[in-house]
Image (cartoon, rainbow, N blue to C red; front, side):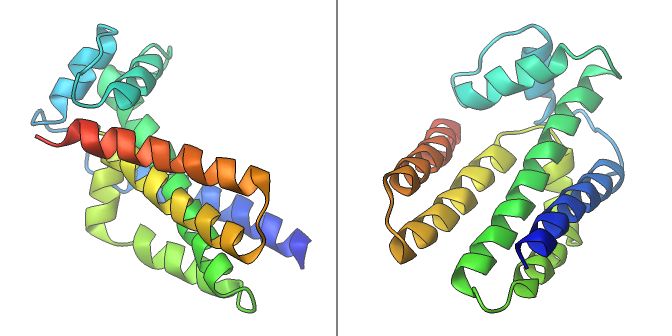
Length: 168
């Protein structure tokens, strides 16, 4: 059973990346352009410093244009969110592992999620922190371990740091 879950996670990541990378129409220079411009100049935004650091690293990749690079970072973060949804669902429903994949697929095909995952901005990093904190907390509640507690705290730190910093 564990082998099938590992294969399912790999298939979910691959499918999520395909949906998220090709599911958006491309960039429009709106509010997201601030993040791309700051990332290309390796400047940090006071609004979302952790996301700015990740976007700055992604902007230095030698492929595509800056908008594509930072959008690809958000697509990867979107895949991380989908994996978190699957893991949270498995933690809530341990006897029904397919429910996690169904929940992740339902989220992946919604246009607002695809748009958020395809356009630069700190929302996907905040969502990843929130969903993984939930997954780790549920798993820690079922089987308390020191590693589970630290994982929960780290994910909460990512989520809170981005959410609090990005509020206007």
